[in-house]
Amino acid sequence: MNVISSLKKAGVIATAFSIAMIFATACETLDSLEDMDKPDRPKDKAIYVVSVHEIVKYPRAQSLEMNIPSFSGTPVCINTNYFLHSKHITAIEIVEEKDKPGFYDLILSLDRRGRMLWSALSVNFRNTQMAFVIDGVYYRSFSPEQLGSDEDVSVKIKGPFDLATAEGLKRNSEKNHKLFNDDKK
Image (cartoon, rainbow, N blue to C red; front, side):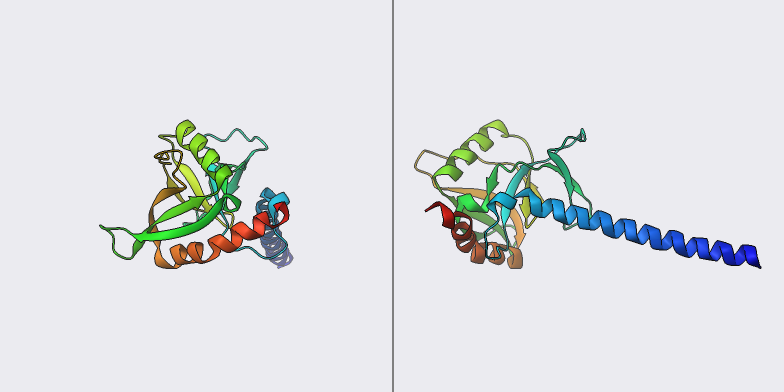
């Protein structure tokens, strides 16, 4: 009888320890995601913050690589240095996809620095899948299209984006751009 109750106690302790470790790991991941862009974090709360990252297919456990959560539940490893951020997106417009009603593509209007960053991104990662991240969570992959000319101020991110996500991105894009650039004026 003593042996069985000791085993039950050990099982309860092991379960409690496992839950505590999972909770601690989740907290560390969330802290890391918040620290990822801390120098750029505005004083007001920004939501639907967009960033574009390189997807790391073969992680080498470098300090610049991090697993982030995804909407599908499977973590995705990215390079934490973003190539584009909400601070470079002046506005987002949505366009319904012709072959998928109810789903949308995004048209990102970029500031001057954003156009330069996108130009480099679209050349260096032309046939590469990049991570489209919303509020530190991987949303989807896309392949960057090149700007048409020096006068182009917008780029298209091919969907599908559901209506709620697309509207949230559109509604918050100008506010986020102002929040992230407020101190630079």
